Amino acid sequence: MQFSGNKRKKVIGSSQNDLYEHCLQLYAQPPLENISLTEFETFAVERLKLLKTVENLGVSYVKISEQYTNKLQHEFSSLNFPHRTEVDDRKLQGGPSEYEKRRKDHISHFILRLAYCQTEDLRRWFIQQEMDLFRFRFGLLSSKHKTDFLHKNNLKYETVSAEEKIILKDKLISSSYGLSGIKVEEYDFYKVPFQDALDLVRLRKVYLLAGNAYIPHQEIITIVLNDFRTRLSKALAMTARSLPAVQSDERLQPLLNHLSHAYVGQDYSIQKNIGKISLEQIDALAAKSFPLCMRHLHKALRESHHLRHGGRMQFGLFLKGIGLTLEQALQFWRSEFIRGKVDADKFDKAYAYSIRHMFGKEGKRTDYTPYSCMKVILSNPPSQGDYHGCPFRHSDPELLKQKLQSYKVSPGGISQILELVKGMHYQLACQKYFELTHNIEDAGFSLNHPNLYFTESQKFLSGGIKKEIETTQRSQENVSSNAPNMPRPPPADSKQTHEEMGDLDSFFQDE
Image 1 (cartoon, rainbow, N blue to C red):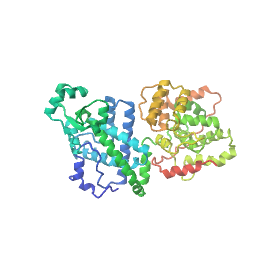
Image 2 (cartoon, helix red, strand yellow):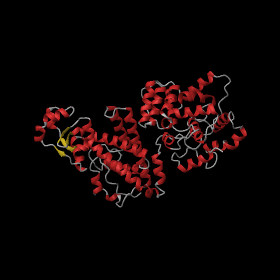
Image 3 (tube, rainbow, N blue to C red):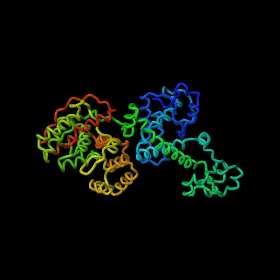
Image 4 (cartoon, rainbow, N blue to C red):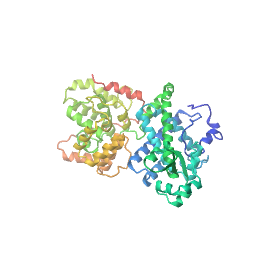
């Protein structure tokens, strides 16, 4: 993959090396080297993991708290992103050097620009997470390195002289939070045109004089962030205009489309609990361990004895992921549909093939993966008569409130969920729903998949699926024995293409 003309061998010792001189940058210059498609995808996925961690931690913790800092620093280390202030080419304990980390940081940012410039929602999400990431990294810099960063990026705000600080000492103390007379003399102040510091002016955190805002060193992050946001917003708009040329490259188009809807967690196409769940158990599990989207689909199926193709795909693959065998799935869907307007003969002709296809027994024999949260949220929005999708994303807030009330969620909990929904943090709203329905303070995981919700719920309920089955069997009379275990299907490639899922769609269409 070629970003421009220079090759990697020429980078060290050149202007590109100067670009990585500082551990933080404004990403003003694009990468100038060749990289492989494998490296292209690896860098992008790992930065996406980092940004999703930034999003989750930002809602779960106060952004300047010790917990937030420690968890995010751990993620930096585990994903090999830069956090040291000096650059060198030495590899520490077999890992990448600081130079290689900074190179990865640089390239991965520009790759995600390509993926996240496509819609307004994607651009808004990307800008917010990159800003939070930048704020965190800037806050870790020492005073010297902050000044170096400003000068290196031509943010050469005029430094207030010692004489002027003495003259304005009382004014600066009264207008700046937490400063004493001694600190005024020790700390740098910057003179910035007031229109560049409107956020600080609005909060009355700075002293104004002759059209300039006098900004203490610790508040300069606000000015830098505004500059970063403006640059990134303009860059994404320019990238969007150039996107058709990039998408004409058939090597890149599927990668970029995948990244904007990417799921970076566990592959739930591999059924670890295959055959361990009985059909009689599903109702009890739905009430205790299904995420809201699947609970909604299950309720709709039980009431109307039918789901349209979007609902069958979303719910059917979820049930497959929690352990239903092919025989159980056929029995489950047939028994429910024949209670409605579909007789057994029509079911066998119109619907059974699609279920076998879902399990990799027909057509391309692809073992399809249950939908991730990102796929549920961003693709195939429900229309009238549909029950699929994400309730936190696709439901009217008032209807969502009524649904949560019917499930006995407390008024305070409903308010917290609706606030997250208002901020478009749909997965975090679902995680909050998990915490409220399981009566815990912190779920202890980042929710990104309906099947992860189910797995973590079963872990929390002690004893997991095995205990749930035993409880259900003891409480029911004449429960039929579990269907015999099916042979474990071969592991599937988790990177399934959009074309494969489109092929499955065609088999789920209603007549």
